[in-house]
Image 1 (cartoon, rainbow, N blue to C red):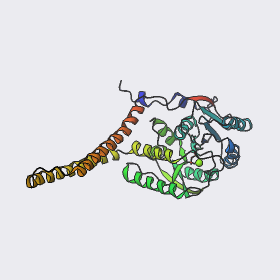
Image 2: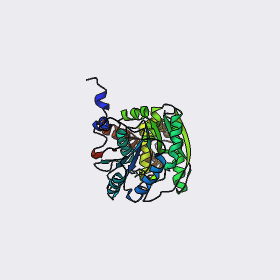
Image 3: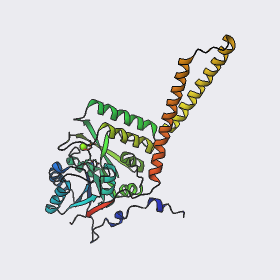
Length: 332
Ligand code: UDP
Ligand code: MG
């Protein structure tokens, strides 16, 4: 019964990533795509121009349950370029899981993860590859400026990174997205992390190995629309915090202690006052304040516990991370 593998077994798809003749390209480029029909053809043209001089490569387009023509566009790309693979998931699983699915199917010695919307310029890839050839296992692409983003989004991103840096055991690099290059051993390591709540930036940081950073300028979105609104960003932040730290649980404990201490002091005051002034009925407002405050603290604390409990609930089901509807590997 003591088989940890039973709980962390990679999805079966991970075992079928080699081509039928057993060969594999030097580079795999993993591209999660959700409703990206409008820009994907341009993307592939630019990717091809960048990758061709580097060596043998494949592009794994992960269709994350798109509802537009993304699948048809990928198939059209495959019609003209045998190095493109299509991995269609059975529904929209979200970028993090789509990326994981792509990594599971990547066979390259180095794997590059890049957004389909051309916000991560493919032209940076040669620099990532150069760093990999120097011996780095993980090459983060860090954006120098966040163009086309509101000051509020920039501020909230900054606050989040600062919080994560101080709260958790792993140090998240600032301003790095998922755009990066990983060596085979890093990809294999990440493949072993099968948790359902996937905060990819955290997972990338967790595996460690020699890491370096390449800087680039992030462009505004090329076509289509961002799928991130503040609600989704908030949930991503929550995911990051609850996946990598238990600080909120500790905070709840200390908050409870402080409130208990204050109420003991307050009780002492009430007792002393009653002894000196006799039994007065005054104090309704302060009573209400205390009752409401304590009620609020308790609800918040329960909510924090609930966030963790919900995640434990999801993890214990051991469902596969994703389901593949169609997978066709690259042909050359
Ligand atoms: N994406 C995905 N599944 C989703 C949402 C997004 O695969 O549910 C892909 C999307 O197609 C793009 C990348 O993830 O290639 C980044 O998405 P987006 O541009 O919306 O995010 P942002 O650049 O604002 O972080
Ligand atoms: Mg984008």
